[in-house]
Length: 321
Image 1 (cartoon, helix red, strand yellow):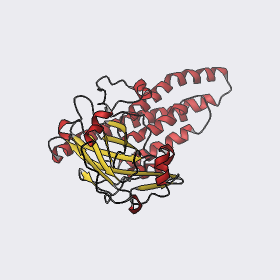
Image 2 (image 1 turned 45 degrees about the horizontal axis):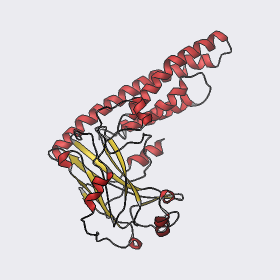
Image 3 (image 1 turned 90 degrees about the horizontal axis):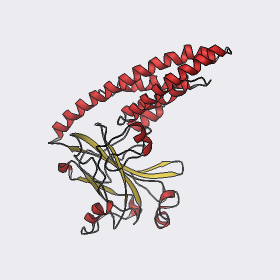
């Protein structure tokens, strides 16, 4: 997990509202587990089962956003053979429901995933399609708008396998014809990724103050979850370990009773962790292992929970820097 944590945290981002292909690209697209979300920030059915959010409004139809591109001239970008170009701009931040627009030399009909995420806990995602060198997605946020703070807008071209044949014929079946700073390869999987930062609020200073307040709350929540997981770990490596290794019927009955009592608690902690933004959501991994640690099944779940808790705790020391 440690390598994964550092791989995810090492995301290089551009710092201006408008960034071009010369800006540092984002790092690996391997994020901590999370459910699918739409532009309004609404989670998938799986996440909705963990936590309902009735305040989220339906996103604006995609056609309304892409209509904005109709009157724009084709962008002046280099040929794809020179390297992938992405120019990303975040608009409508004053309305608190931003729209992400971009220019690119990726082929016509290339599918891209556009996501917006902030330390305030908002996560939204939408698919866009390149049309005449441009794409757009959004608006992102609930009906009453995003809270003050700093946000990341990420644009990612998924692997060639999910692209239309017309796109694969130009980028290669495995993306082997793509090159440039924004191209990321993991074995035969090739993606194009870029992240830019933007602020919602009066100015960058007020957004930064909102971030500090929010980060303090998120760290407090992670510490609370971590403390409860440590209690479950103590039970899983102590009394429950003794009971599940016993051949006595009374012990096994008691083991089952404790398992039915403690597993819902572990699941609830994981749901709380999944509701946190990245990187605080990393606490979800030990919570996932903990569900089996407090069961009557033999295995290495308690060891994995202990290891990942230790790694997350070490990572927590860097969050205030």
